[in-house]
Length: 495
Ligand code: NAD
Image (cartoon, rainbow, N blue to C red):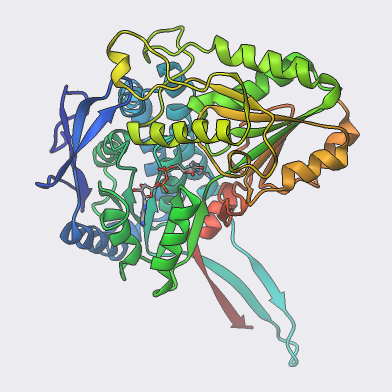
């Protein structure tokens, strides 16, 4: 079925909302800006209060209608069809991600889009494999009782997402929420509305019942996002974004006591021991600091290096940073994209200024590259390596979310663990060592939701994912996701 709105492939597309199985335009529009050169490549239709109400109502109707009656095997098949259709439209998804974020097409091709597809495949399979619980209980009369649980959906789930890995993070929530039988109302970031709109097209094309998947475009505070979080008809909220936004959503959700799943910010540490494979550690830390221009919640912003190899490591990491090639997304040599927006660049540059004030030695970077071409209208920034900051400096404590890391020396394991754990965040940490006992010993002492040893970002999608402290509430991934998006009912039968 052809979509009832402009495709994101046209030069200036109009990105519509998708509510109750229909594409809906609104008169309030906002620009979708390409951060490579600051040009407007699409405009999105902002959803106001009436459309938010309609989307929530459409979700309720879907739960009481075709979607709610669909057996789990059929839901699983439908999610597989979503993945298959996304695969057919792979290049369009890559183009949408690239147009919104400016990231290298090679990254969208190897990370964002394949993971977006895998999210639907993994949860389609998991749904078929997931069993229930059953217990026999003894009773005084000797006849006993049988207890089993039914897995039911929570209802209409609001899915609110950030801009850094738009399709990957959105599908990470939509797939399990729909697998568990919920209707979803999805709000992508206002910075990245394109791939979510393509996903709505795919949902439409493969015959997802109207109202099971709804998409609303808009902003956060005072706009679509806040309207959703305060809505009485929303049964649960799953959110990925800044810790401060998490706070605001928690307050908004408090009145109706909505279940929350939060994947929030990080200030992640890497610890590099002198016994590490030096080249692998440099490469791994560089990737973890600069991938996606440092705009991944799991990126390393604090690096602790054993003093014996400190100087050599800093020099090698800085050389790696200097070798990154900021280029047009489709140039094969490009290894660095721009930041997401001019506003975000202002924020990161304010930390570059603050770092200097706080006493950082700028080993490399610290500024804005000049190209002498249209890229000068974009949001580019130099990858940066600092040393010399006090551990109390704001630049060591606060999430910056750009291509910048601070490197500091340590002398022994206890000191390294103390430094790494001295954070209000607790999302991820990485250990670089060839000593297996040390790796096991320290992995258990790191205060983080995930600890990598001699790698970064790698993860089986069935494992729990999430953070502690300011980094989030709850875990998603595999059965942890299905459990969050389900409301089990226990049935107890006297035999
Ligand atoms: P953000 O919190 O500014 O925005 C995220 C989403 O929330 C957007 O869709 C936005 O419109 C919406 N929003 C903002 N204020 C809102 C409000 N008051 N009510 C309802 N919705 C609101 O985050 P961002 O700048 O888009 O993304 C970057 C942040 O996301 C970083 O802090 C990063 O660490 C975090 N992040 C975390 C993970 C994780 O898995 N832990 C993954 C990716 C990004």
